[in-house]
Length: 266
Image (cartoon, rainbow, N blue to C red; front, side, top):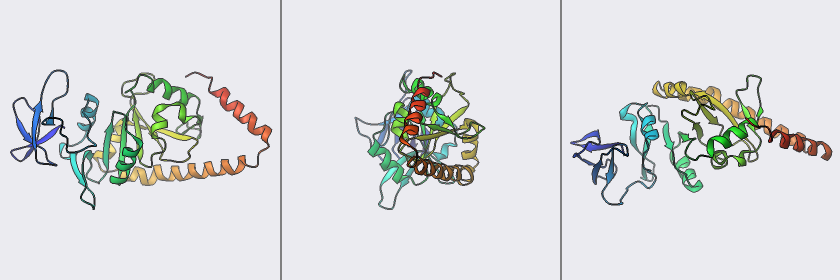
């Protein structure tokens, strides 16, 4: 936890300081060392929010791109359930920065709890994540002439996509400084369109941050992301209807060509 209440003010951890949890009111211990980023922790193994995970430098770097008063905001629903959002913007969008593996049932619970949720997922947590992502991207099909949208034909062969492509929330993959992919871009996974394929696009990291900080992200979603998603859903429905009338020999040929594409390397 980055912030605790110290004399009624939300304050970062400092050696020897004493703070209190803003969600449960219990005393927090300032953990300050050279190995882990400075943070607050509950005494013992106690944690009042089961959704909270230990922070990495990657987490802290993302949080610091937004105003302090947007960070670690308590969000509650109509039942009184409370959780600490990594960032909650002025316009109501919740940003969750996810580094560790998340069980599907917990991901679905968070999607339901936070109505306006954006996931930013660490794309470099496992050594295999980047190679797998590059591979499926290389084997994907460009949907538009500008190569801004990609149809991933085999999402199950990339663990990141396998874990996230059925999400109904907005998901952005962050590959940080990986030179193999443009580090200035975040890769965007369109919310569930088909169980068989996934659709990817990209957005400038700077654009993503600026739109949230200027409360213009809603406009991007409403005028860009959702209309494109509707078109992609229609596209998949049309492809499914067409394939049902295709001769079996042609279907075998198309499967053969798809498998041939899988042998191409990035």
